[in-house]
Amino acid sequence: MDGIRDKTIVPTVDIIPRPEKIERRSGQYCLDGESEIYADTPNLWNADYLRNLLAPSTGLPLEIQSDRLTVKNGIHLVLNPGLEPLGHEGYRLEISPDAILIESFGTAGVFYGIQTLRQLLPVEIEERVSVIGADWRIPCLLIEDKPRFSWRGFMLDDGRYFHGKEIVYLTLDLMALQKLNIFHWHLTEDQGWRVEIKKYPALTEIGSHRAGTSKTMLGKKHDGIPHAGFYTQDEIREIVAYAARRNITIVPEIEMPGHSLSALASYPELACNAGLFQVATHFGVFPDIYCAGKDRVFNFLQDVLDEILTLFPSPYIHIGGDEAPKKRWKRCPDCQQRIREQGLMDEQALQGYFTNRIAAYLDSKGRKVIGWNEILQEGLVESAVIQYWAGSRQRLFEAVCNQNRFVVMSSYLSAYLDHGYNLMPLSLAYQYEPIPDELEQEHAGSILGLEFPLWSEWVPDRPRLDYQVYPRLTAMAETGWTSKDKKNLEDFLRRLEKFLVRLHQLGVGFAPLREAQPSIIRQWFGIFSIPLPQTRTAR
Ligand code: TNX
Image (cartoon, rainbow, N blue to C red):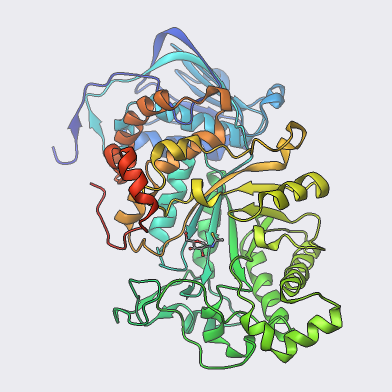
């Protein structure tokens, strides 16, 4: 029959990220026509999620029951205040021959228990059509699990290329599978503005289009193929809700003061010298940035952020801050006047003023600012979080130790998914340790976690995206969740084999292991090469 497959299914225990504690027991639970789901009221949405996950491939009714006592062969999803020590994301999963119990202190933990249960089932569970003759058996066991870090992030750069909502939804689904909980959404860039702002329609009418794309960093010539796209506010609201159901916070990034040519092309009066700006057609760092001397720039940014705040409930708002050349500010009378008025040392300090003014605004709205490590300057609001990517580690440690600042680690050399596998092979991705050795134990808690950015200069489409991200993100997800002493590369690679079959089943591509783990010679060679611009299909 069309769309139906015959399978013999064998249960194994290969979970990524590796759980804290697994205790195997004898026997098996069998998911069958009798099986029902019970959920307490806070977990009803988890019950729906579970049913949608299991019903298509199993073809089973899996009714959701509200009376726990009458549930047969049940999967129980419940809160248990006694599990507070595991935190709101930790969970307990007990599989016995006649019932499955997933319990947690919070609904997020129950959700993660479901993700673990999913990986205990054969990969055919991911089929979206009914698999005939399957035996949906799960080995009996007890798992107790909790994450190491509270910030387990992935960043998608939608500015350089607009990827579109299909990719975003899939990304959120795959993040959930890997127990990642922060989706950092880089929405504005020199090459494109990707979020509808009602008060400033030109941002998307003009700023979301570019005339073409140059395949070299310096190239002034481009391919003449227009590229465009943005998310409407309605789409964003749906995406944010979809993410929330998967325990994912979306942290939007509105870049400032640099990487902002698309905004200047739309509203040239935001630059130091109003001129004819164009949405960038090549990549790199551009001298034209928001003017720091004109108050209208701050009014504009506050208006934009006001709309962003209504769309994104995230406690954190990312304001970029990286790679802002000071060339224009040096010659701009308004910027120079601001420097004098404020008694600032130089243009570097002017960026500090810029950041602080925006950070104070967001702080007054009850949101925390996060920015790339360049925002770390004198007077930065206390609550601002630093995302470390490059630069002085000493400064970072001082901020942690003297100012009690929180940090998210995304070291350029070890966490960038846009880098080639020669430069960052899978084993290096797996071994990335976000708590630096130099940091005293008492400050380790200041590291909120880690994040893996996918900058997309060379990522124009889905096959390339899959290839860059997988399997490295899977390795990094284990670092975000699993305690350091439980991590083991060999064991991970063994579990990964099954995980890759699951990705394949989900229609997701990945770099084959021989490319993800290149020889030492190729790795050395990689140090001298930049990521290749051409697209390669993953499968
Ligand atoms: C640096 S990381 C950037 C990005 C580029 C990336 C390419 C950071 C804060 N800025 O604008 O896309 O390198 O790897």
